[in-house]
Amino acid sequence: MSIDDPIAIAADIGGTHMRAALVTQSGKLLVRGAIDTRPDDGIEVAATRLADLVDSLDSRDSGKDHGSPVGFGISTAGPLDPATGIYKNPPNLQAWDEMSMKPTLEPRFGVPVHVGHDATLAAFAETRFGPHQGAKNLLYVTISTGVGGGIIANGEMVTGSEGHAGEVGHITVIPGAQTCNVGCDGCFEGNASGPAIAKAALARIDAGEITSIWEAADRDREKVSSKLVFEAANNGDAVAVALREHALKAIGIGLGSLLNIFDPEALVVGGGVTMGLVDRWDDVVTEVKNYSLAHFQQDPRLHITTLGDDVSLLGAAGLAFRHAG
Image (cartoon, rainbow, N blue to C red; front, top):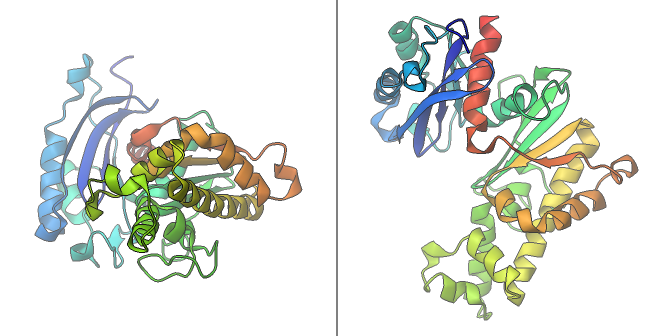
């Protein structure tokens, strides 16, 4: 690796934490750091703190001097307008509505700042750095605290007319089942996300059903989680098994529907709930096949991400390199 290898600044912004890294064009993270987001302090304070974090990173820590960054890419929870970086009623960053970090960051670093939705950039990262490098049609779905999606179609990131495309978590999968936090009846997120699984477990407990989940959570409602549900299901707990089967059905309908609509080369999934079902992956694939068209029965094109938690940082870096030419 020579000094001519370009690097980009990459940031990943969520409601709880902000991460930053210096990333090479080949996708190597040279050095990284993280701080709390503290969104209620305001976007200008957050942008300044993020800039300070970036300034604390030095590519020479990797043993090489890679020169100045070619650009700054940001992967963030939204919704937002990717052209301007302006947030649009973001549920986890409410104090930042109608504001952008770009006016603070661009003068500070003297390079263009490009902003994208985290799931969209995760999909982009999969086509640039992962085993699906070069794919022109790919979907990325994260099943975690929420359910979100990124769409690559004909080699382009699909963002929609106002940057809101990819809200796959709010497609209806089981009408009449649980609603999500924004009130969508029976949606993917409302029935397969981590909080949704915990909510369903608490409803069973409140109804008086006997389950080891409650003891595993030390009889503390805040400790009931999808992780505990899956652990109890693996141990044969009947309530937990039923909860897992419900989540698997929701996942099967949701992912199967996306396959039918988009016909991607690959449908890549990540997130905490996905990782919690790794040992039941055959069941996930079976459920997806149950709700897919015939040509997906032999190969549902379903894959667990190999990029892990770095997928958003890699997507942000890829966005910066793409604009740098």
